[in-house]
Image (spheres, rainbow over the protein chains, first blue to last red):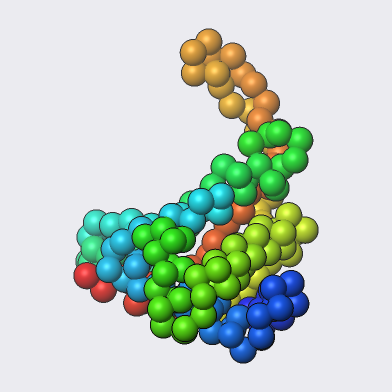
Length: 95
Length: 92
Protein backbone atom coordinates (compact mmCIF):
# COMPACT_ATOMS: atom_id res chain seq x y z
CA UNK A 1 0.00 0.00 0.00
CA UNK A 2 1.15 3.52 -0.73
CA UNK A 3 0.54 6.85 0.93
CA UNK A 4 -1.97 7.86 -1.76
CA UNK A 5 -4.10 4.77 -1.11
CA UNK A 6 -3.94 5.34 2.61
CA UNK A 7 -5.00 8.99 2.20
CA UNK A 8 -7.95 7.84 0.12
CA UNK A 9 -9.03 5.38 2.83
CA UNK A 10 -8.77 7.98 5.58
CA UNK A 11 -10.68 10.62 3.59
CA UNK A 12 -13.39 8.05 2.90
CA UNK A 13 -13.98 7.60 6.63
CA UNK A 14 -13.65 11.17 7.92
CA UNK A 15 -15.41 12.97 5.09
CA UNK A 16 -12.53 15.44 5.02
CA UNK A 17 -11.40 16.06 1.43
CA UNK A 18 -8.62 13.98 -0.06
CA UNK A 19 -6.67 17.15 -0.64
CA UNK A 20 -6.80 18.25 3.01
CA UNK A 21 -6.18 14.70 4.21
CA UNK A 22 -3.11 14.50 1.99
CA UNK A 23 -1.82 17.78 3.39
CA UNK A 24 -2.36 16.60 6.98
CA UNK A 25 -0.62 13.27 6.33
CA UNK A 26 2.35 15.03 4.74
CA UNK A 27 2.55 17.39 7.69
CA UNK A 28 2.50 14.44 10.13
CA UNK A 29 5.54 13.01 8.34
CA UNK A 30 7.17 16.41 8.14
CA UNK A 31 6.72 16.94 11.91
CA UNK A 32 8.24 13.55 12.71
CA UNK A 33 11.16 14.18 10.35
CA UNK A 34 11.78 17.63 11.75
CA UNK A 35 11.72 16.36 15.34
CA UNK A 36 14.24 13.63 14.51
CA UNK A 37 16.56 16.04 12.71
CA UNK A 38 16.65 18.13 15.90
CA UNK A 39 17.16 14.94 17.98
CA UNK A 40 13.74 15.24 19.56
CA UNK A 41 11.75 12.05 20.10
CA UNK A 42 8.18 11.57 18.94
CA UNK A 43 5.84 9.54 21.14
CA UNK A 44 2.59 8.39 19.63
CA UNK A 45 0.56 6.62 22.31
CA UNK A 46 -0.72 3.23 21.29
CA UNK A 47 1.40 3.26 18.14
CA UNK A 48 5.04 3.65 19.00
CA UNK A 49 7.87 6.14 19.21
CA UNK A 50 10.48 7.48 16.85
CA UNK A 51 13.87 8.20 18.37
CA UNK A 52 17.47 8.91 17.48
CA UNK A 53 20.36 6.70 18.39
CA UNK A 54 23.87 8.06 18.43
CA UNK A 55 26.42 5.75 16.80
CA UNK A 56 30.02 6.25 17.86
CA UNK A 57 32.74 6.68 15.28
CA UNK A 58 34.57 3.43 14.62
CA UNK A 59 37.26 1.85 12.50
CA UNK A 60 35.99 -0.44 9.76
CA UNK A 61 37.61 -2.21 6.88
CA UNK A 62 37.04 -1.93 3.20
CA UNK A 63 36.13 -5.57 2.54
CA UNK A 64 37.61 -5.44 -0.95
CA UNK A 65 41.02 -4.00 -0.16
CA UNK A 66 41.33 -4.76 3.56
CA UNK A 67 42.19 -1.13 4.15
CA UNK A 68 41.19 0.38 7.48
CA UNK A 69 38.75 3.27 7.13
CA UNK A 70 37.31 5.55 9.77
CA UNK A 71 33.52 5.66 9.99
CA UNK A 72 32.45 8.97 11.56
CA UNK A 73 29.92 9.11 14.39
CA UNK A 74 26.38 9.53 13.17
CA UNK A 75 22.78 9.70 14.28
CA UNK A 76 20.36 6.98 13.26
CA UNK A 77 16.57 7.21 13.49
CA UNK A 78 14.61 4.18 14.68
CA UNK A 79 11.06 3.21 15.49
CA UNK A 80 9.99 1.34 18.58
CA UNK A 81 6.52 -0.16 18.29
CA UNK A 82 4.21 0.19 21.29
CA UNK A 83 3.18 -2.88 23.26
CA UNK A 84 -0.36 -2.30 22.02
CA UNK A 85 0.69 -2.50 18.38
CA UNK A 86 2.83 -5.56 19.04
CA UNK A 87 -0.08 -7.23 20.81
CA UNK A 88 -2.41 -6.52 17.88
CA UNK A 89 -0.08 -8.54 15.64
CA UNK A 90 -0.13 -11.50 18.01
CA UNK A 91 -3.73 -11.88 19.12
CA UNK A 92 -3.06 -15.06 21.08
CA UNK A 93 -1.34 -13.01 23.75
CA UNK A 94 2.24 -13.87 22.88
CA UNK A 95 3.46 -10.35 23.27
CA UNK B 1 6.99 15.65 20.79
CA UNK B 2 3.58 14.05 21.25
CA UNK B 3 0.51 13.61 19.11
CA UNK B 4 -1.05 16.71 20.68
CA UNK B 5 1.93 18.81 19.60
CA UNK B 6 1.67 17.51 16.06
CA UNK B 7 -2.09 18.13 15.89
CA UNK B 8 -1.63 21.65 17.22
CA UNK B 9 1.07 22.46 14.66
CA UNK B 10 -0.92 21.09 11.73
CA UNK B 11 -4.14 22.83 12.76
CA UNK B 12 -2.28 26.12 12.96
CA UNK B 13 -0.62 25.71 9.60
CA UNK B 14 -3.66 24.48 7.66
CA UNK B 15 -6.53 26.34 9.27
CA UNK B 16 -8.32 23.01 9.79
CA UNK B 17 -9.83 22.50 13.23
CA UNK B 18 -7.92 20.53 15.85
CA UNK B 19 -10.79 18.06 15.81
CA UNK B 20 -10.43 17.45 12.07
CA UNK B 21 -6.67 17.15 12.28
CA UNK B 22 -6.87 14.93 15.36
CA UNK B 23 -9.32 12.60 13.66
CA UNK B 24 -7.07 12.34 10.61
CA UNK B 25 -3.94 11.71 12.67
CA UNK B 26 -5.71 9.03 14.75
CA UNK B 27 -7.02 7.28 11.65
CA UNK B 28 -3.61 7.49 9.99
CA UNK B 29 -2.04 5.63 12.91
CA UNK B 30 -4.92 3.18 13.25
CA UNK B 31 -4.85 2.33 9.54
CA UNK B 32 -1.13 1.61 9.63
CA UNK B 33 -1.82 -0.81 12.47
CA UNK B 34 -4.70 -2.39 10.51
CA UNK B 35 -2.47 -2.89 7.48
CA UNK B 36 0.23 -4.54 9.54
CA UNK B 37 -2.31 -6.84 11.20
CA UNK B 38 -3.38 -7.90 7.69
CA UNK B 39 0.26 -8.57 6.86
CA UNK B 40 0.46 -5.71 4.37
CA UNK B 41 3.22 -3.18 4.29
CA UNK B 42 3.09 0.56 3.76
CA UNK B 43 5.75 2.36 1.80
CA UNK B 44 6.04 6.11 2.31
CA UNK B 45 8.48 7.77 -0.06
CA UNK B 46 11.12 9.85 1.62
CA UNK B 47 10.11 8.57 5.04
CA UNK B 48 10.26 4.81 5.30
CA UNK B 49 8.40 1.52 5.17
CA UNK B 50 6.26 -0.12 7.84
CA UNK B 51 6.15 -3.87 7.61
CA UNK B 52 5.78 -7.06 9.58
CA UNK B 53 8.57 -9.49 10.23
CA UNK B 54 8.12 -13.07 11.29
CA UNK B 55 10.27 -14.13 14.23
CA UNK B 56 10.94 -17.85 14.33
CA UNK B 57 10.30 -19.94 17.38
CA UNK B 58 13.41 -20.18 19.53
CA UNK B 59 14.57 -21.59 22.81
CA UNK B 60 15.35 -19.11 25.52
CA UNK B 61 16.27 -19.45 29.17
CA UNK B 62 14.50 -18.36 32.26
CA UNK B 63 17.27 -16.22 33.70
CA UNK B 64 16.23 -17.02 37.27
CA UNK B 65 16.06 -20.79 37.05
CA UNK B 66 18.16 -21.46 33.95
CA UNK B 67 15.34 -23.61 32.51
CA UNK B 68 15.07 -23.75 28.73
CA UNK B 69 11.71 -22.39 27.60
CA UNK B 70 10.43 -22.20 24.04
CA UNK B 71 9.53 -18.73 22.71
CA UNK B 72 6.82 -19.28 20.11
CA UNK B 73 7.07 -17.73 16.64
CA UNK B 74 5.49 -14.32 16.46
CA UNK B 75 5.05 -11.31 14.21
CA UNK B 76 6.73 -8.01 14.99
CA UNK B 77 6.13 -4.61 13.42
CA UNK B 78 9.23 -2.99 11.96
CA UNK B 79 9.94 0.36 10.38
CA UNK B 80 12.71 0.66 7.85
CA UNK B 81 13.90 4.23 7.62
CA UNK B 82 14.28 5.58 4.08
CA UNK B 83 17.72 6.58 2.89
CA UNK B 84 16.51 10.15 2.51
CA UNK B 85 15.45 10.44 6.15
CA UNK B 86 18.62 8.67 7.35
CA UNK B 87 20.75 11.15 5.44
CA UNK B 88 18.80 14.12 6.81
CA UNK B 89 19.28 12.89 10.37
CA UNK B 90 22.84 11.52 10.12
CA UNK B 91 24.75 14.78 9.94
CA UNK B 92 25.76 16.00 13.39
